[in-house]
Length: 269
Image 1 (cartoon, one colour):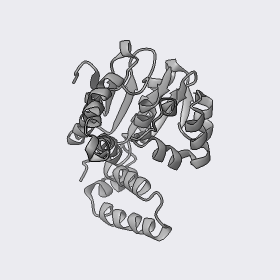
Image 2 (cartoon, rainbow, N blue to C red; image 1 turned 180 degrees about the vertical axis):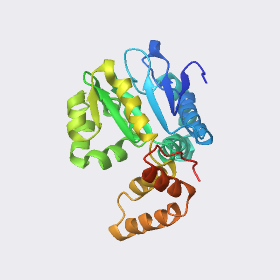
Image 3 (tube, one colour; image 1 turned 30 degrees about the vertical axis):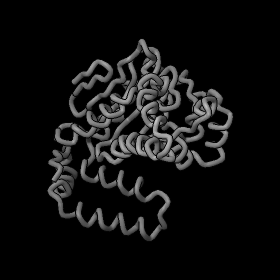
Image 4 (cartoon, rainbow, N blue to C red; image 1 turned 135 degrees about the horizontal axis):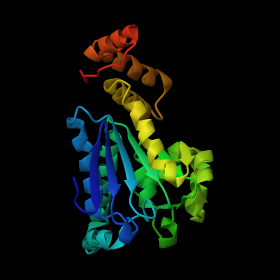
């Protein structure tokens, strides 16, 4: 699948979505927000797809938001002076919903970042499950230089991931940071050379393809939806999900595959 700015490719159990505006530093338009979400969601209907990789073409992952595209949307709302900002809030909620849908997807998503990753590009990465970065990648959240904040989950997701104090530093200074700092703070899982980055992502996705997809979806829900809830509630989530998984055909297949020392053939049922 391709709409020029986004390219999708199926390779075995892996579906790769590429930001494809290298001439515009992969700046993300409103249509691309919608497209990324819809392309990822459409893979739930393919029984072969076990992982999604999100990457950028050209010299960098993404320079962030495309201001021309966003400006057209915001400009309409700014004209609604009597609405007390309601139109702008509704617009932001709509954009937030795309990343919420991406995060809710049961298929694991690996985001690979190289070159530079800025603003909205980082927010997009935060909505994914695993983040990998090239060793020379530079990243930043420069929104405060424009007098605004990151409102598509950047402030909230980043604080939940790496802690409030470090997140305040990143936003309040708007500094450039290194891949090594991203790894040390827990923003990314691993850093690799740019030449090895995609291959390592595909290797990780290949490992994910050997595990049970229904159980993987349950793990995502428990970890993401359980963030911030008290322990007993999260333990209930574990019990409820496993009470379903233990009655699936995939559980029986997993047991048989282990006893017979062969790869499991998952059916998602």
